[in-house]
Amino acid sequence: MKVHFLGTSSGSPSKQRNMSAAAVSFENTKAWVLIDCAEATQHALLHSELTLYHLEAICITHLHGDHCYGLPGLISSMALNSRKAPLKLIAPRAVIQFVQSCFTLTEVRLSFDLITIALEEINDKLPLECCDIETIALQHRVPSVGYKLTEKCIPRKLKIDKLQQDGIASGGHYNLLQKGQDVEYQGRLLTSDDYSFYSWQPRVAIICGDNEKPGLLSQMIKGLDLLVHEATFTAADLHKVGFHTGHSDAKRIAQFAQLHQVPMLALTHFSVRYHGEGMLQPLIEEAKLHFSNALIIAEDGLIVDIPKQKQVECATA
Image 1 (tube, rainbow, N blue to C red):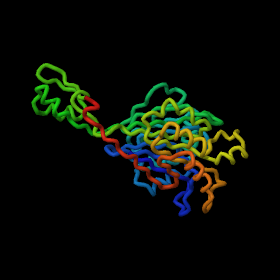
Image 2: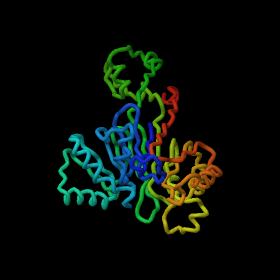
Image 3: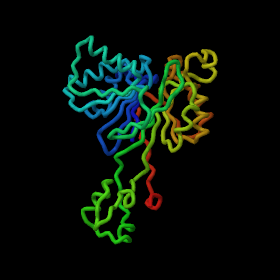
Image 4: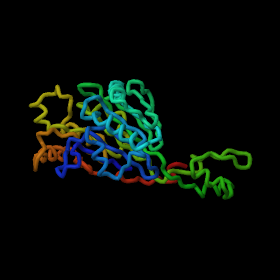
């Protein structure tokens, strides 16, 4: 499971750090998910290992333009390339209306089904081919969410000792159990969960939209491998600018991640005041002062590979 940071640099050699798009890809499926879509996202994708052909879903965190203005162009490009597979768009209702209006006014005809899911109507987990998605309500100047992605498509291993102990001889049913299917064997039902286990624990990432209150993530943070969160300012600069911005600061998110022992914290969405050689260093140092685990400073083109935690057979027996 990898997180790809896609900035707004349009391929410029000068890497931008105000991330407004991230992609999540997976090992055992070509399907992947895009979180937010800034104006130059599709240009950034040209320099990545990802292909739009396999994009399964686009998830928009909130309606501000730096998180959604790239949508009409990106989706139109997919149609121009004769995509046929359906695409899910998970977004605020206003963003869906914005995209549909753009297509109507510019007479765009899609070659595939665009399945729209309004954030306001989501009450439960959304199952995709590559992962399960949950939404977390955040605090910003407009409604904003974080997306929690839990990996799927993990290879299973058989509990050979248990199968032999229960007198279940080898055969085609072994293969089905390993694929996660329940099977009939000599008049009884064998469940895959009883006789197989995942090769590694499902990896989990939370990728947030703009958010001034990290504490809103508390109920969803357990078992997390990677948290991607904005740190628009240092604490001192945020106090100068004012809390009306609805943004967070490096100190606040670092303290939250430390409190909950998040293994990996990726900071994004830095104010333009920190762009330039060495300008971001005070923000980095502030985060390091309050967070002792793996700290990642997002930049255009960076790929974070989330390590696997091997599943132990006896833990699932």
